[in-house]
Amino acid sequence: DGAACTPCELGSYKAANGSGSCGLCAAGTYLNVTGGSACLACPANTNSLAGSASIDGCICEAGFEGSDGAACSACSLGMIKATNGSGSCVACEAGKYANSTGLKAIHIVPSCLP
Image 1 (cartoon, rainbow, N blue to C red):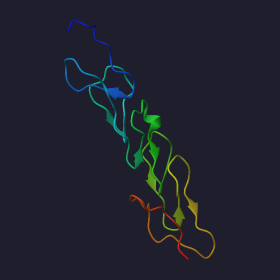
Image 2: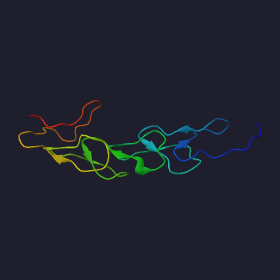
Image 3: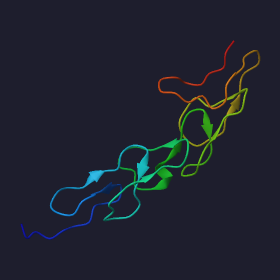
Image 4: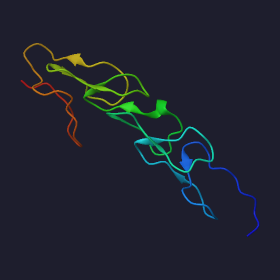
């Protein structure tokens, strides 16, 4: 149609040439450059919101610890982390235990058992 092309913004991409609009990067991916044709996967055991424009938007999943934008490690036996984000696993309170490492499943929150 003769219109000038503009690059896709950070956190969005367009995989094919031609007219059309840019799409947001899916959850679990990011794109930190303009005009990109593919989004990049977040590091291991992290996730991001759709449209993330930086690797720092990739945060540790519950049951895993580490820094934003880096691969995260599973909590050890006896340790839990019930929320997403950076931060450390914590020991179960006295009289309770965690019998698995890095609990990671949809709709299951790591917790200490009586």
